[in-house]
Image (cartoon, rainbow, N blue to C red; front, top):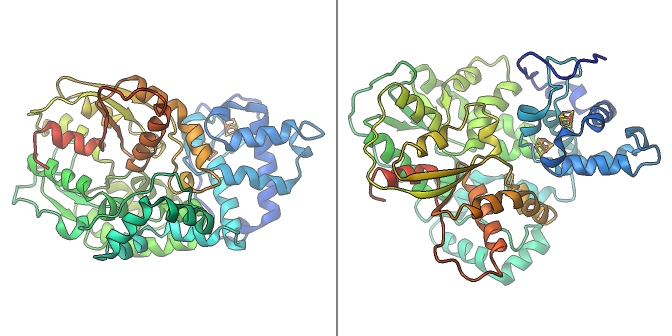
Length: 454
Ligand code: SF4
Ligand code: SF4
């Protein structure tokens, strides 16, 4: 083994060999976990990132040998269960990622273990499949009348108690409401603006709306089209859209990810070929198309074309500003914004583009917190993990609360609501604050700052 401390070269990521029989070989996976756990044991940089590393180090420190070889392999699954695939240990922390010869890819090793667990079946399989079927849930829950019942049930303490017992969804965790009118059929049509390409940006946008914005918070989508219209940028909605697959990916259900890719990629690739930049208002969905699908399908030209066309909305708007094509006629100050940069934005390696955009708004001060909120997709609402999700997020709740914000904001709206819950718990025994912060997505904040009506 190389004695070099960390790689001097830019990290590279190996494709996921999920279609080979070796990927699902349990002995080979456990052997690889033993090798990587041993490297982590000697390193321990990631101890504060999530609970996977503390669980691993405790197993090692309490083993008879005080080394990885003293930990029974059946206990490795405890580490796997604590990983929610945020990717931060790979992208921001680990010096031993490829091309370093130690070749550590902790998240993808956890994914491989989860894929094996998923194939074998777990006691929580029914709950996990139900929670991760965001598109199907949205279609069912937004049927008229059903939507009122589903939303009322989510707020009913007795029913939430039953839901916790039967489904394993924590009865105190914040759950999204479903909207009576979804985004896609109700989105305003674009004005007939001319396409003005910049040096860095295409002048026309395709919006992949995401399950969350379509079914749960369509207002974010409506705000996005208002911002584009205000800047005379013509847009279209992606003609057909299914879930991006991230909730299935996080379960290790890679066959379902592949099935969703078959639905999404043809219309997205067509738009990419036509020169559209594709934006999605939820970072996990952007990451799916920018990183995970390209690694699952490295030889698929259409997947790679979509990767090339996909941008975070603020990455696009800031690049548009650099092209001299963004309006800055802001009408409304925002005051203090406590802004959370979520893990799935961080690992896109585009910098703090949302913060840069919010800081363009006059009389607006932005406190940026760049740390895991603990929500982590569907992981944080599960009964067995919700308390840990709040513990992981506590430093974030504290920092964001201490800034005495007018607004709490995160590119990941699920994280924002989890933070809202955490801040509420921090303050529950304190006298009511004079001002209560409003939770709003950064896209909504920009729409407000432009003075555009709701
Ligand atoms: S991917 Fe995220 S959750 Fe998983 S081990 Fe790394 S830091 Fe922890
Ligand atoms: S993933 Fe990398 S940085 Fe993190 S503990 Fe393991 S070896 Fe160290």
